Image (cartoon, rainbow over all chains, first blue to last red; front, side, top):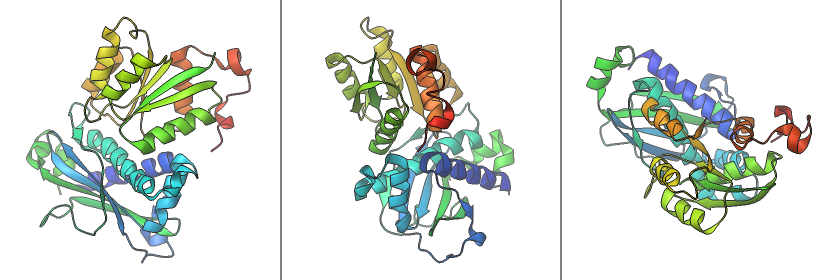
Length: 164
Length: 142
C-alpha cells in the first residue's frame, strides 16, 4: 500500500477521535509514555469490492474517557458500553476510510464491531496493509487496515492507493 | 411544540450519543425513543407519534434504506422528517436516500451539525423557538 493509504487512515482516525470522542491524537513519538499497552481491541470487517478488517487498538485506561466523552458520565460507567464506544470508533473510521480509499462509487457492507479481548491478530498469517499509531492522553491508540481480498481490484481502479 | 424523536441505530453508544446531543441542543424534546434496527423502528412508529426520525443505514435485521422505503410508502408516515446519521460513503446509496427525502449527517459529526440539520428539516427556526441568540453553534457546550 502507498503512503497515501497511510495518510488516509491517519486522517480518518484523527477526525473520528476528535469529533466523536473529543480526543486529540498526537504523533506517537511525541508522547511521554510510549509503552502504554494496546490491550483493548475493536474490529470491523468489511465486504465489497475489497474484503478486510479495520482494527482499533487502544490502551484500556482510555476506554472510560472515550465512553464518557461520547455519552456522558452516567452511561460511561458500564464496561460493555466502554467497549462498544471503541467499537463505534472503529466502525466510523472504517466507514470513512473505505470511500476515500476505493472511491464513492464502491459499495461496502460493514459488519457490527467486534470486541477482541486478546491480542490475536486479524487472521493467522496476515500482515496489516497499513498502520498508524498515536499518543492520546495517558495512553496510546493504533489503527490497522487489513485487506484480505480485492487488492487487484484496487490496483486496477485506484492505482494510487495500491502501489508501494 | 416539543419533538418526539425516534433514533434507530444498532449501536447503543451511537443512540446514547445522539440522544445526548439532542438533549443538549436546546431543542424542545418531548420524548426520545430508541430502536436497534428498522424492524423495531417501524413497530415503534406504528405505536407512537414521532415527529423526527434519526436513522442509521447499516443495521442488521432491517437496514435504514429499507425502513425509509417502507416509511415513504405508508400514507401515515410518508411525510415524516428523516435524517440519516451514518458513515455511509457510497454515492449511489446516499443519492437513493436523498431521493426519498432524507437529509444526511455523516459520522463523525460535530454536535452543532446535527442540531442545525434538525432545525432545517423540521422547519423550526432559532428565532421562532429560542430567540435570535439562543442556539448559536457556540452555545452547544459539551
